[in-house]
Image 1 (cartoon, rainbow, N blue to C red):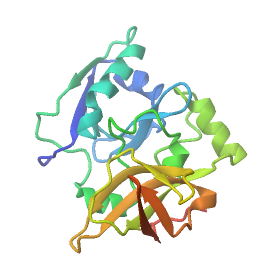
Image 2: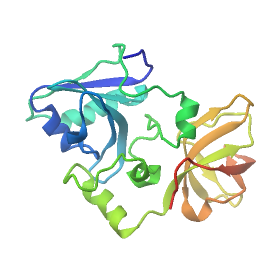
Image 3: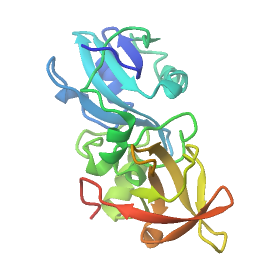
Length: 237
């Protein structure tokens, strides 16, 4: 295990797996000592609170790796449901371990994998972040918090917003959660993550209305800029 700048949450106790299985989108029964699994924890309305990679630390201990800014929010949300479970939920971000192979923020962005932070929590259903295309969701595992909303969007095809990879013609990295508008002033979407590349260009993941995904110019922070849609390493369908 290697050092990481990610946040780490430990769930320890005999009920940890059973408890977490009822709270997250992935099927934790697929976990083993030599593999990890990605998932999300949602509100009852199906909005993503945080994303994570889960791994087994030992037989009664699961560790969730997530964005450091969301650790406190994640723990508080999980603890609301853990009152009657034999599990202890702890911030162990000071420990030197990682659940999955480390990616730079830019590589993660280019892989089309969102990071939910304190600036974007409780805003998107999983499909808006393409989590259904990235194996963050099991549609066979049964009930979990927010499952009805997530399943309805999946089976009815009611996803009108998706996450896209964009190249923005600006020198300023936009803030996470910043709104994007068209030149008429209508909001088109939201910045999920953004990074400057070695060429000084800004690459971003943004949730946009699918009807606006091919727009060429946007307004961000009252400045009009050109935008290019880049290919993701998976099909949006």
